[in-house]
Image 1: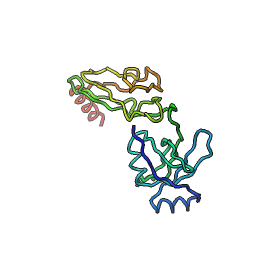
Image 2 (image 1 turned 60 degrees about the vertical axis):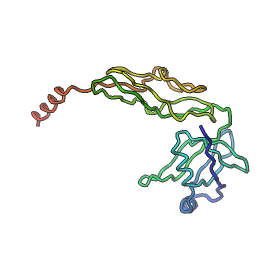
Image 3 (image 1 turned 45 degrees about the vertical axis):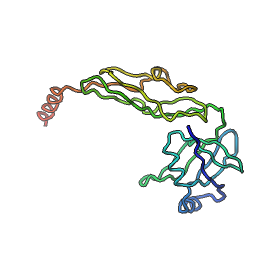
Image 4 (image 1 turned 180 degrees about the horizontal axis):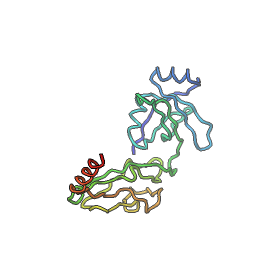
Length: 195
């Protein structure tokens, strides 16, 4: 995973008024905490932060007290309608430190013929990995699977240095059988009769 450098500046004003002024100027208020440090309040460039957060588990580099530090997005607050970023909590991490994150589960391959569907029981997979080598996603093949088949967390091949942070027997994906056309018609007729 590549590092994304953000030109943050220290925040000295606090409260709703200060936060509104920062947002009008194109910044997003944020706080960095972790490793027993006193929380550090920053203003981050809004557009750059938005672009960085499009990458799952983005590893950000921000200047804190004159020194570049690694941080991971921990919580992002968004405006309800426009979905703009209102505030971000960042977790301070060190090189070599293990962290637990959730990575997206991507599906590839064709199911066995029959119109079956893949149900995502888990859209993301909790894993533990080194903070500066976080996987962006994990890909699972459903090639040739038939109705009733399921893929458990232990069946997924993880990148080197990454371990599961969820029960190994947890179901991640399952294949659901397509409903027969006759059954759909019978259900529709039954609903019409009841009406």
